Image 1 (cartoon, helix red, strand yellow):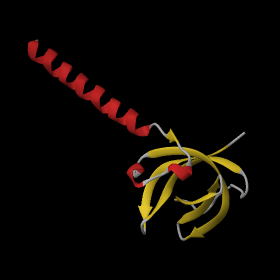
Image 2: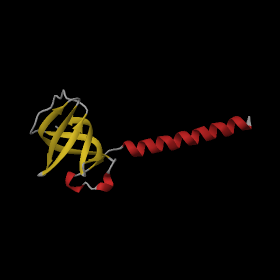
Image 3: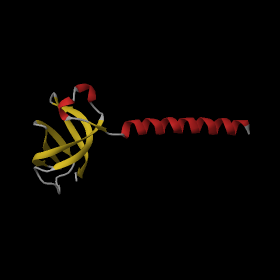
Image 4: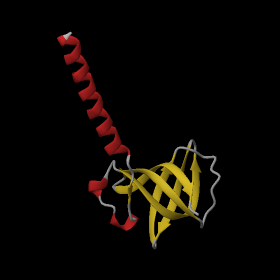
Length: 113
């Protein structure tokens, strides 16, 4: 019986640690695009911005975003988008770097009311 108790305590502790790690990495931090720097790479963020331009390329789209006169590029794994330009949206995604330029890998787009 002691062995079963020890195993269940170890499994419980490992499960709690895994859930803590997942919850810390899945919470998006709200940011201003002008404040993004290289140390923010791979962090999950959320921000509100306008879409200036949508460029579909094969199986993904490059979205040019504008927030407070700062232009930024976002990448979305879709070409069939039901979004319009010059409207505010809430974007959720991770920061990445391509050709020495920061960009957002967009995971989710929501309407802003």
